[in-house]
Length: 168
Image (cartoon, rainbow, N blue to C red; front, side):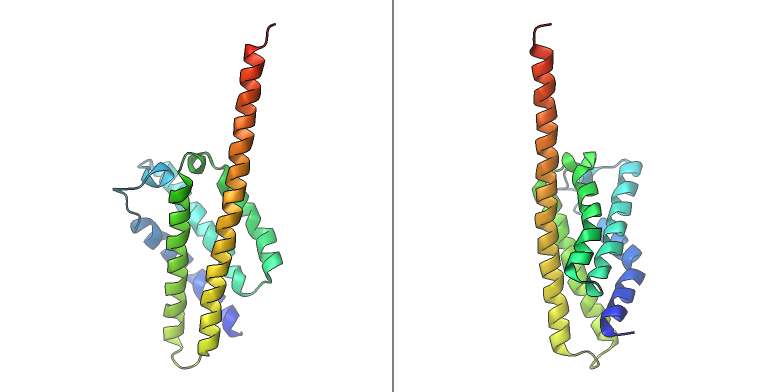
């Protein structure tokens, strides 16, 4: 198994822990939208979505970018259409993407520390740069999908208003 595959395996084996750490570290006093929910069902869905995110993102180290995003866009679009996320300010969602990105950089550091001296520093740097790039692209793709969802909702509301206000 090469080092990219080892990193992927390490991240996958820590996906559940990453989800729990992410949720536990949410600033619930200042949270808004879906992140402020106290409803156990919504919290469970939020955690499942985060866990599913990890299952996708780990593949970025072993797949080419096109293959990765072809699969990952399914998750991005699903999240962008999620009713709880639609009611959450986009700035809060981006903030959470950025917090998870930091988790990944920290997790890479954790992985590297277990192989002290056996991983080329250039590879470590490349992994971190790759994480930053992939998260940046993911954020842009999410914003695009969320804007499309908002546009379609607005259009449907406008059509309904038009229909309701038209004479019979």
